[in-house]
Amino acid sequence: MAKNYPTVSAEYSEAVDKARRKLRALIAEKSCAPLMLRLAWHSAGTFDVSSRTGGPFGTMKHQSELAHGANAGLDIAVRLLEPIKEEFPILSYADFYQLLLQLAGVVAVEVTGGPEIPFHPGREVRFSSFFLSSIFICLWV
Image (cartoon, rainbow, N blue to C red; front, side):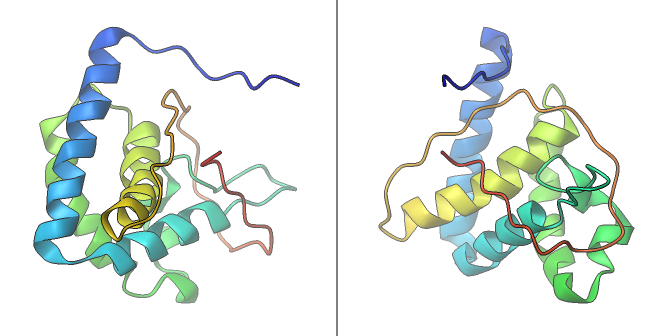
C-alpha cells in the first residue's frame, strides 16, 4: 500500500529546507543532539490511540505536555527551538514542532553519524493530550 503525504507549496518546502539547515547548525553549536532526540521521542510518544490526541502534531508546545513528569527538562529544548520558529512564520506549529521536534531527532541522528532520514511536511495542528500513552509512533519512515 502506497503512503500518501500532504502536498505543500514550493515556498513551504523551501522554508522546511532552510529550517532544517538552521536546526543542524543549532544542534552542532549547542551540542544538544541527545536532548533533541529525547524531545522527538517524547513528542511522538504522547500519542493516545483512544482519544487521537498528542503525538508529533505540535502538541509539545502546550504546557500540559511539558508538565508531564516524563517530559521533565524538555522545556529547555522547546525554548532553544523557538527562535527558529520565529524565523519561519509560514511553517505551521504542527509542522514546526514535527519538523523541529521530530526533525530535531532526525538531524540529531544525522549529526552524530547516522543515516539521512526523510521528513514529510504538511501535518495538521492538534490539541494536547494530558497523558503519555504506552504506544510510541515513529513517522520517520
